[in-house]
Image (cartoon, rainbow over all chains, first blue to last red; front, side, top):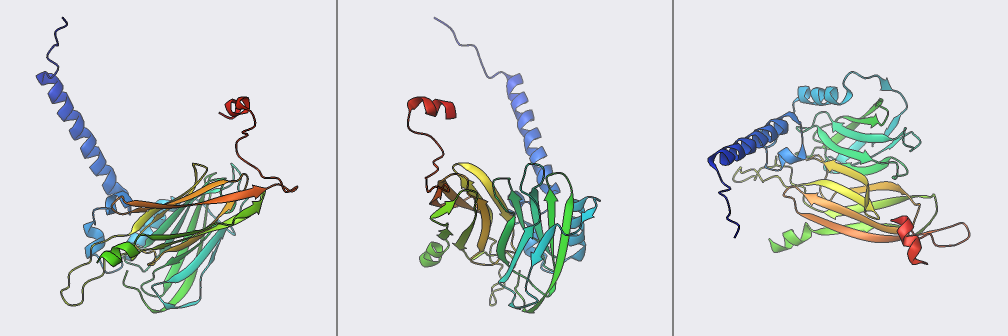
Length: 174
Length: 136
């Protein structure tokens, strides 16, 4: 009969613990680098719950991280937003990207930001060539009257940006 | 409380029943959800309501992901969203909403796509057994 050898030697257990700790620590460090990652915000991050005042520098930092010093193309993305919004809880906006949805020329990501919100990033939209047209309508929250910014990152690496100002009479608390 | 919980799970999806080939159709989605941003306080006690929002919406057509969006706390309550899709073959449209706590819910609809001659376009040929192998 085949006798089983001792599988759990001390060396193997040590190796296991080392590997697990490495993976765990790398995950933590990655989570802190990504701003506004949904996987980080799942556990109700401190930053979001206790920083109620808006921070304009954070919005600038997020935009800088998206654009990364690339040239901004004109007439690439059109944003449609109302001039005056009575209720800040539901502001209907829509955008469309001016491109032929082919392999070389389609928007990979479209970001929407509101600068004066306490948490400026609102949504990201990921497209594929199968979605025949990159145009989306959505309703957002706004705290005060401020600029809405839409940034499109194309598949060939170019970037387009627009902004439009919305007057809000009654702001939302977000 | 039970009623509120049930309200958070109502979803709506609107897809046209039929379309011509190459037409661009709009898909309208709506989720009934009190997107709690994690900033609001109880006026009497001052306790912050815990954050609970939908953070991921995925649209699949015949099992392939064609559109995705991440949401953060700035999306309004009862979030409505409409987006476009190109109708090439007839098939199944699925939209999935994922919560902050990983709870997901989905809704599905079927779209029939017709040729110019009024012929149905079906993604897989089911006439012969051999034709299935070619597709696979």
